[in-house]
Structures are given as C-alpha cells and as structure tokens.
Image (cartoon, rainbow, N blue to C red; front, side, top):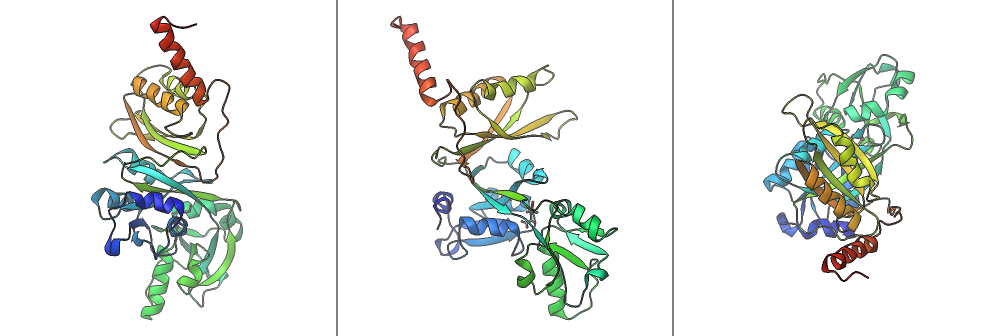
Length: 334
Ligand SMILES: O=C(O)C(=O)C[C@]1(C(=O)O)C=C[C@@H](O)C=C1
C-alpha cells in the first residue's frame, strides 16, 4: 500500500476481509478508478463503483464505505461542482490526499462502426467540454448524449454486444478513457482526443474527520466559507485574512448556498497546512469574521511544491511575535 493509502486507511473501519472500502465513480475503468489505483491497489482494498460523485460521498457518510475517491478540479472546467456541493453540506467529511491524473480520450464504438457513421456521441459532460473543439473540427454537428461517467456508455456497448440483441442505445460512439477500449471490447475510432493535450484532473480521497495528515512542507488546506450578509467589502475582508499572513490561494470558487438568491458560499484551497502558524492564524481570522467556516482538511500536495514563505510569515515569526506580546503584557519586554 502506498504511504498515503496507508494514511487514508489508517482511520478505516474496514470492509470484508479487513480491507478498507473505497467508493468511486464507476463502472470499472473511469479516470476516477485510475486515481484510486494510485492510492491503493484492488488487492489491498474493496473497490465500490457508484453511479455518481454524490453517491460515492454519501456512501462514506452512511458507513457503506470507509473512503471515497472523487474528482474535485480539472484544468479545463475548474471545480467539479457535484463534489464541492456534496462536501459543503451534510455531515462533515475531510480530504486526506490528492491525486492527479492526465486526461485524454479515445473515441470508441462497437466493432463494425466507422468514424463516418458517427452522428451521436455519448460522453460525460466534463469529457464533452474537454473535447469540444476537436469534435467541432472533426465531426461538425455531432450530437451529445450525456453519460453519468466516462465508462458508462462503454459498459452499455459491451452489454449489447454480449447479449447479441440489436438494442437501440441512442448513440453510435463514446468518449472513453484509452484503457477502457480494451476492457469493454470496443474499437478505437480516434485516439488522443482532447482540446488541451496537457489536461489534468485532480482527485481527492474523502474520509471521516480524525487525525489530520501530518504536515509535509508542501500541503494544501481546503475550506468552505460563508460571508456576513449585506456587508460592503466582506469578500475583500475575507481575502485579507489570507493576504496579510502570506497565505496564497490556489483555488477559490463561489457556489450558491441554495436558500436564497444572492447567497454564496466560497470553496477555497489555501497553500499550507493547518498546523502552519500563518494558516492557523488566517483560519482563526475567518472564524472571527465569517458566519460559517468548514475545515475540509489539510493534506499533501500531489505536485509536492512548497509555498513561498514571505518575510515575517514563517512559523518562528508568529511564535516570536506572540512571545513578545506576552512579555509586553507582563511588563518584561526588553
Ligand atoms: O472518472 C471519470 O472517468 C469520470 O467520468 C469523471 C470525470 C470528472 O468528473 O471530471 C473525470 C475526469 C475527466 O475530467 C472527466 C470526467
């Protein structure tokens, strides 16, 4: 088991055979499964495919799974809203690890189909936007048939071939992860399909709150923050909590809270670990100023890039300043 697989399974209640249970977006062969394989192998864990991201996260809340692996951000679409919204509400869960997966697609069909036959393509909505320009250029006018995952249409094509029945599926081909072509016995019609050849999707391991993974020096902290209502400059004031302490943000997105128009929640990735003085101080500032702050975890960055520490924002600077203040209050400052 990899190091972070061990971290993730450390809090596990474990399923059959004592192996931790991981819920993820299936069926087999999704990019999410490729991310899960980076965390823990199928020999070490029970893989529990789900029909959508919300179901994977709820499986952890209900106790049907110990962990979930879900997409949270892509270079093309930004935040995965289903994941952000599921984590923002409901019983608190935390992120334990992140994993990056390069994303390119193969356009595939059942044996016998040619590229010139393709009029309707089944694809996950995120796959479709990642290939829009390629499709407009090579298959102008082709119709999008939305799918629940990148391998759901592949599984339908394979089942129809296995049943030997001429069932009308409503599509001629599908955008699938390259490895799924062989898994589902499909034929490739076009390979390396992607508008951005360096597209990457970021996945996270979700678990129950418990011991926070130890700081590595290259960490990320994810938060959900609500702002005070009707307060001019509330967003600026929230951002200043990070800025004045030298904490860089790698992602900030607004999502509707859902109870009234104009009410938004902010989903934030900050560089650093909650045990870093500057991050802890910034989160305390949010707690003082904002009506709702949810800590979604501190975990190692997949790219292992350490943050730039600006003058006066190292741990020693905060500790030294606190010691000095204590001495001033006690009348013993020199
Ligand atoms: O894991 C998969 O294969 C998925 O279908 C999900 C998902 C996503 O939710 O973003 C994963 C990677 C790609 O960015 C497109 C779709």
